[in-house]
Length: 129
Image (tube, rainbow, N blue to C red; front, side):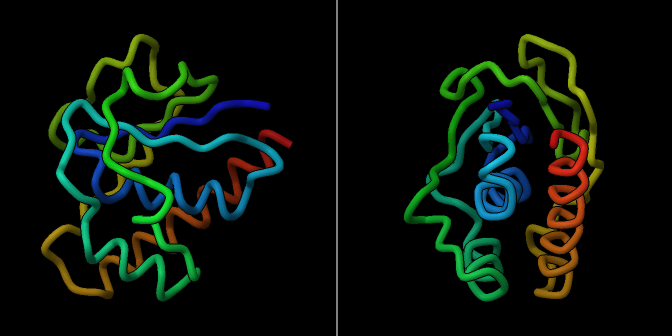
């Protein structure tokens, strides 16, 4: 089974949402991981709340902020958005989803981000099937 890593700088919001949705929507097609070049003490609480509200997933029970060297070398590496510079992960990124960070924004921004990630997870699932 392919390993897919969702990468952003802090591994606290978009990449965590992608890991959760990948595990939820495509566990039969690929293994989902998220990581960053830095970590935060906890996952973004707005992201946790919105993912739980929309999908019934409690990210805090199954996930935590991780550095890139704490996850397996991925077959597919996806940057969540390199608006502040893409980290080097030991291989080129397969895709850059260029998603704006919703941190500090309204719930509508978090919901839109979650729905966009869901759409892209489903497209990735179809591509890897």
